[in-house]
Length: 211
Ligand code: SF4
Image 1 (cartoon, rainbow, N blue to C red):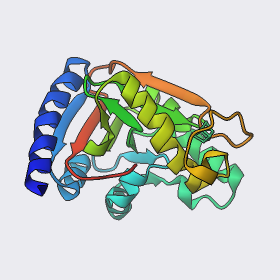
Image 2: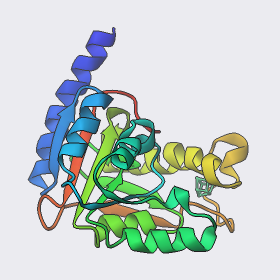
Image 3: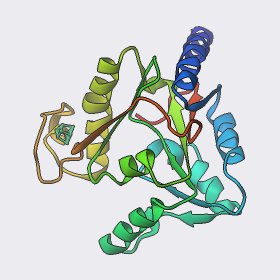
């Protein structure tokens, strides 16, 4: 059964990579997380400034640790001593050479869907860093744009909320479409195309990664 799941991921990734490339994204598929981390590192020029948002995928994959160990200037907001310093690191990340993140969801036809509370991650995705490199588990690929938005809002967002805050979804795992003070769903970004072409590199991973 695992072999069939792997085959399905490969087939779907082939289709999704083509659709991403048609929209100007750089895209590729790696069967394992370890391969994906090596691919991501190969896209980061030595000596460049690297930043990231609060992505579980890039942390759990080992990518952020590998960047810390490499020859890069790192902007790591998780090392901030207080909220004020964290805010400044978020701002500095917008001028980094390379920004690492995942996506909350992705449609089979290649549209990225992302939700943010403060918007720093979405800002970096839109403009600022010279390059954005994404690690995206195949578990985040949804059939349609509507399915991708639904995944981002009803699966990714409640889990993210449990990491950072105390909103209605953290009590029952279901989105309440809230307007709570600490709502993490304040911005919803659809990235239809990548311009300039190749600025956003999407590395699809044939293993469960992130949520
Ligand atoms: S309840 Fe609020 S914070 Fe939780 S997923 Fe829904 S909109 Fe986002």
